Image 1 (tube, helix red, strand yellow):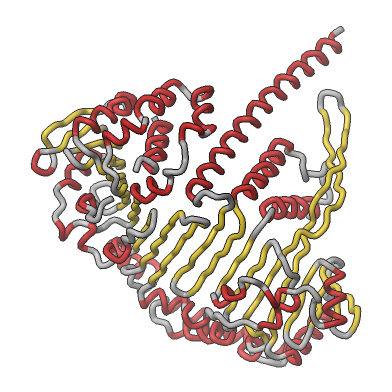
Image 2 (cartoon, rainbow, N blue to C red):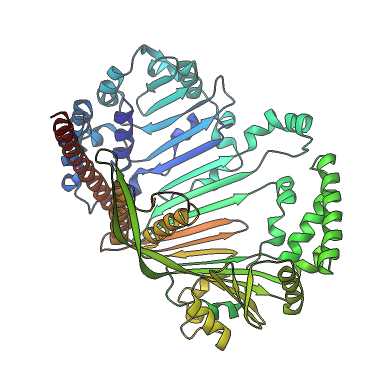
Length: 583
């Protein structure tokens, strides 16, 4: 049953425009979550793809259960979908304020008879459904329901509703909502619904206000208004990239508590780009204002949204922190915050390939074996901008006197914990595990081949920026595994590469990703964020993404077959060993 519903939803995305969303009347205004999918735009963007040529068709033919195979081949044909559904919008929602909590999908259909014929095989698979006719608004709806699921429709719209109980009653109520009781009455729906995007998701805290405002004050002492905190997310498949956008709007209470508009910044020290290598696989930048962040923390002492206990504990901790900092460093916490500019940058390159040994143990033969493999160790580079080098030197000298594992290579060049190199310049602190680059920074103050001409420098105007490309997924996987071995020195067997099947999946998935996708850009600012994931090839990003998913499905199926074959060989080997031992 779940497989049929999943396949139905996937195919509906590509089955298909409406300027008016009449189905909005079926969504209650107290919905916490709301989503839409633009079937028309997705249908138009997928026109260049022949779905009959996808690998998934042969996989369904060869491996899918009979019910799924019949459902896909007979009911989800293009002709059947076109006969059943209008090419408009799928809407979805979730809420907890109604009788038992409810969520569901709202589908645009052409007529009642076609939809009933379409949905009947799914209805036949659901146990204990009871049928009602001539119910709901204007007695136009037919409903099949049990306690937890209800499927209902009239001549234009179908609703699939899930609830903890009383699903049929929930569905009937939704069909009779007045405008002042539906989502159209909210102050955010019109702004949220963007017909230029392929899909959207909106989450609001407003319905939580009535239920929890008083409870938070009573039991936690938090005097905050939960209403009017809104998060909107959009996604769209453009010609050469996938675009997403997130909008965040918090009310005054939450804005005052977090204070992010005060301490999030966009400025950065451009000299840091001279210390990072060109052509990185990953590059990240963060900008904050340390002094404003500290001032915000101080302001929380008098923020009456917080319970008095929290404010007084914060006041004591700040006082103690200032006292300790003054005693240890000769400066208070505010002066310490002024040492740093607040901009940080990090980069990763492929680094070098080294040999690693994988140990394994065969419990049937009592033999230990090993394999030599190539492992990529990434080079990592980080920079932290300085406002006051003299005060940082004062702080760093105190750290060294306290016995930290720091080896002095020259006056401003250090080796930390045996593997990390640090160079202190007038403008920034430089960290790396690549000694050759640390030597170059120490000698010349910058790298010969650096990021000062980064082609995406205009995107550094955001508070947070992340750039990735190439085989970063595989590189990160190798790095994570190598760390696991590094911090597990007492293990008898090297865990790196021990799970051969997972290693093969990771490697092949990375290869497929690199075949279809290129650079990624992510931005975060005070009002939300954006992302751009660029695709390769001459098809638009939707088609390329479908082809990528199709290739992944084929790969997983092939690997599953290989695992079965290998398991059969192991079983035969074990049988032979047992037979030999018995003789």
